[in-house]
Image (tube, rainbow, N blue to C red):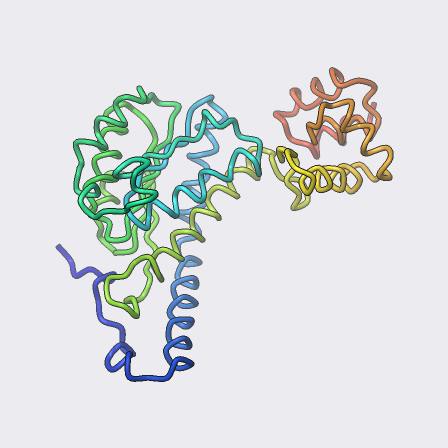
Length: 299
């Protein structure tokens, strides 16, 4: 096995505890910045992974995250926000976390080695070729996400592997591998820091690009947002105003007519006579707002 970059010693670590608070924090901040910068190198792999994920959602499949420890928290943070931000049905997003729900209050190390648990959890999902599983592990060798990808591949599902070490075992189990070559941690092996930061950024990029390709973003606005609080209702109104070029009163009326659904509301505000017409136009253009607006303008 190649030497793990995630276990290496940071050049500034010697005598770290003897330095001033300001000096220590500067080193920590630099470590985070360098880890974040490493993600750009993986852009082409992230793009390929986003297309796999988008195709699974288009096909009616599920997006399944499988991870342990800090990587699991990064996966969970990404997954939980997708339904509200992009309107993806909650049942289409699944998170498998080593140790289960108990890990959210007591994150023990042992469950990450339980590949049998991951296999059983994936098998229980009854995956098929429509589904996509994302395994996340800093080292790239953690048994739980590796076993999850093995089980997913046996079921015929698409697979994505994310790790922070070149040559990691998880890449051999994934249709698309995303290597985030983060530098050694300031605190050796504490991958909740730099590696975790890079994973969070990569997952944000992957899921955001997926949502863009699915038509859930228009001019940088989240047009599939689930507006279930006052802040988001205001955001939805602002999106309709901007996308349809109307005032707040007309935007409010359109949202009322669409029962709060933003994309149909944009089309209603832009001239669609009814919700049914707006939905039909969207259906003809695969849920994409821009060509739907263009078709509506042409009559």
